[in-house]
Length: 108
Image (cartoon, rainbow, N blue to C red; front, top):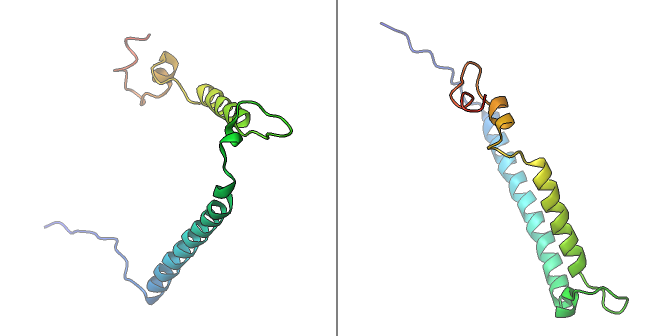
């Protein structure tokens, strides 16, 4: 007859206190986040106008569009350099398990 070894520990009263504190802190964090986002939206939405997205930036028309385009381009360039190209031979060769050569044989 084999013995079944279990590693479950007995629950303590302090486990419930930790559980309640964990959920309370998570609720408070989400509530603060919702408050901050709501505050920004309530105060900022009235100032969004079509001229804010004009393609030219002047002192009279402080457009957001050039900054948005530049940000998207920089994020795209950064991601294209930082994210590995998964079908390249170097990626496949460096990410195979030890002893496994099923993917490597066709690239070597």
